Image 1 (cartoon, each protein chain N blue to C red):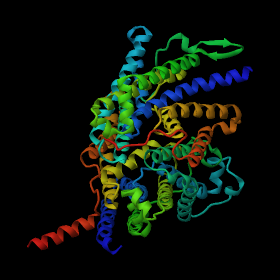
Image 2 (image 1 turned 60 degrees about the vertical axis):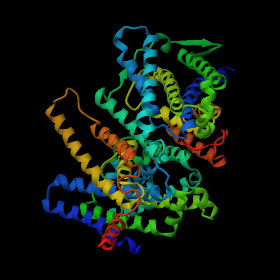
Image 3 (image 1 turned 180 degrees about the vertical axis):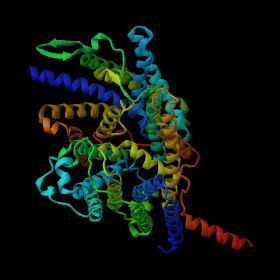
Image 4 (image 1 turned 90 degrees about the horizontal axis):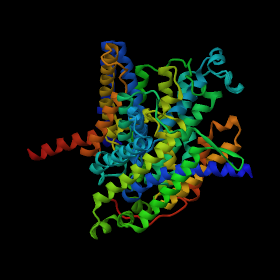
Amino acid sequence: MTFALQFLIDVLSLGGAYALMALGLVIVYGILKLVNFAYGELIMVAGYTLFLVGGSGLPWLVMAAVAVLMAIVTGIFTDYVAFRPVRAKSVTAVLITSFAFSTLLQNAALLFISPRPRNVPLPAAFSQTVEIAGVITPVRNLITIAAAVVLLGVFAFLMRRTVLGIAMRAAATNFTMARMLGVPANLIISSAFAISGLLAGIVGILWIGRIGTVVPGIGNEPLLVAFIATVIGGMRSLGGAVLGGFLLAFIDTTLNYTLSQELLKFRDAFTFSLVILILLWRPEGLLKGPATGQRT
Amino acid sequence: MSRHLLTIAILAGLVLLLVAGVEALGIRVFNRIATNLCISLVLVLGLQIFMGNSGILSFAHIGFMGVGAYTSAVLTIPAQMKGMALPDLYGVLQGIQLSPYIAIIIGGLVAAAVAAVLSYPLMRLSDAAAVITSFALLVVLHTVMTNWSNVTNGPRTLFGVPRATDLPLAAAVAVLAVVAALAFKESRTGRLLRASRDDEVAAGALGVHISHLRWRAFVLAAFVAGIGGALWGHFITSFSPNAFYLRETFVILGMLVIGGANTVTGAVIGTFLVTGAFESLRAIEGALNSARIFREQVIGVTEVVLALAMIAILIFRPGGLFPTREIGALLARKFTKRKHAS
């Protein structure tokens, strides 16, 4: 029983973070059919903002809000620099511009801040533990679960009930048709990048809360996680991204508990081999999204 | 193939000119840079074989470079060195010590074999899913290289690899790679693959077995990457798994994209331009650091500039400098046009 609860909390907290990461990536992919390689750098930006405002003496929540805001701004900026100029050109061109932009941001952090890890301010709650029914768990895991539940709920409401959400879903299904019916294309795309930045910012703070420091390469792992989760779940479906995130967390946690110390080092290799197997079985991912229309 | 004779002559001439120039000058730094350029050229051409013909971006390429480098290293490190360099090596491999030239070819073959097994299922995917899984493949290869301590010495540096690559050898392999890339482009497989690149549905409807053709191109590309990696290993003589990861991927991809992924000419010109720019920037960076103008070490300028150049090229010339035609065809056209005009 205790073990089951421990396992459940581990899967849910890791899965919540993974699902939010995947959602931030897939919201842009759904509309533009373009993978944003610079997504991990949004997390890096949130981390460094937190580090830079660390000495200001503001309440932590204000600092966190500033960090999330910076991630949103960087998200929109990504659209203007790496996507808008080449949007109408080949898929490969856009993939490479976003990869180049990601390298640009990482190396700018190397150049202007430091290659060494920097401490970020965190509230005391992030390092405390609580005991639930005999299971000792860090409070940050519970915070992550709560944040995931709230954000996924708000996000579902936004996509289903608001004009913006409906317009975004319309644009994701058939971009040209949506444009003809009066959906402003650039505004929708910028909103998608803003939401992507919002999710990346929040998940970034939760992610950095696990480690306590930020380095230029901090975004690589979340980016990879988001990639794999969306590929498993189905590249075009928002629900699929969430499912993929939780599934990936389940696989990772199970491997954590079952693999021997010697094999645990190879965990990533096992996880990704499993992903390749899933893709063999269902190349489209687990959940199929709406049929795709043309890009731009 | 005969229509590419002029292209081969020009591109091979460029490489030979470089070798002759460097040998005449006799400056060691230039020799090192030119050898590095030739090895990069092999890697870029390998990537061009897959990306240029299939139109799919592959991130896994540098992983196969690593496979080639480690294979060749394990087969050539002298027996008495192995006790220190690779203390946990399997008994069978401990006694083996081949000539580096044979080991380089075996490195390519092993990389091709690994690619053949791993990539067959992946070739069914297109567009973004294909790119993401190739990225995952790079991570898998990197994880294995970092953790398989018995063969790779783990994340630590592997040393004691005999030095075998010099400028003439690297240049000869680069010229061979140019010929191979052009030959593949003109082969039946290459032509059908480009048909599928331009219109996947139409090519499939005409009976092109797309995933199988992509697989062939991928295996050939991995072979070339493995050779390139092994050459690099025997040039640098000590390396760690981090040499075969995102930074190297970015540089090789940048060379190909700036030159133009669809043409062999683009791959060659891109390699020359980017290497030139990179080495000058690195020299500036080194000068700044040794002059201690800034309080902390200056690092990352080269990558920032390369990233900006890539974005600019893709905005203004999305196909790269040589988007569709090889240089031979371009010159021949110019010549015939002028004749018609007069």
